[in-house]
Image 1 (cartoon, rainbow, N blue to C red):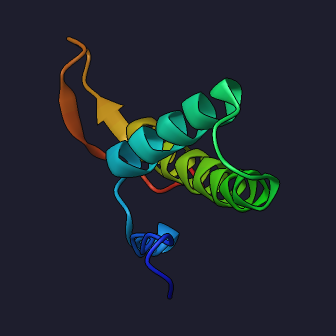
Image 2 (image 1 turned 180 degrees about the horizontal axis):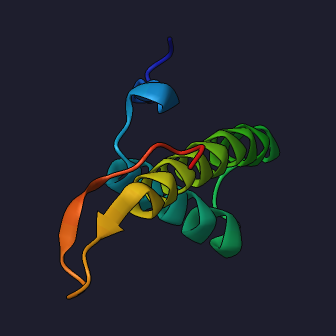
Length: 87
């Protein structure tokens, strides 16, 4: 590495990220791309990372939706347990 090159931080594995962390990083990538900062190679790498983050966030949202749908409510609208996804 030369004196003019800065070390790039190592990105966390997408699959290990929380929804919130992935969304924050995705928002930062979008902002960077919208402002046109960085080289073309950096933009391509950021786009690829952003696509992976978007897919991860969609997966996390689907998992949350399925958990919410699984909750059973009693007659008063209060949670009373859970039901199988197949029910």
